Amino acid sequence: MVTKLNRKELDEALEHLNGWVLDETRGAIEHVFKFKDFSEAFAFMSRVALAAEKAGHHPDWSNSYNSVTICLSTHDAGGITAKDTALAKTIDAILA
Image 1: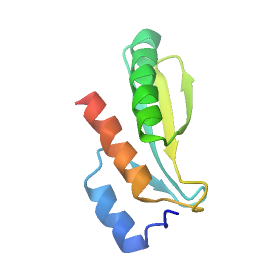
Image 2: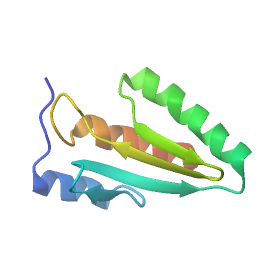
Image 3: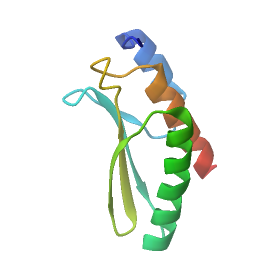
């Protein structure tokens, strides 16, 4: 079983992530991505879906036209774990 990150570990992880913010209410990290249009947003979602499936860790997300909101939390652990920060790094790399 994975364990939740403590606040110090979480703060350190967020320093190395691009634009991810803590949503304390949800116990998750979140990022809103903006794209030129729906097609670019959907292509991004497709790439993230493949990476998430490979990692065995799936985001809560939504899409509205050119905007994709991704929220990462490990439900089994009841909060944010290294699995979430690793997937966030992968998502950042997809955009790089």
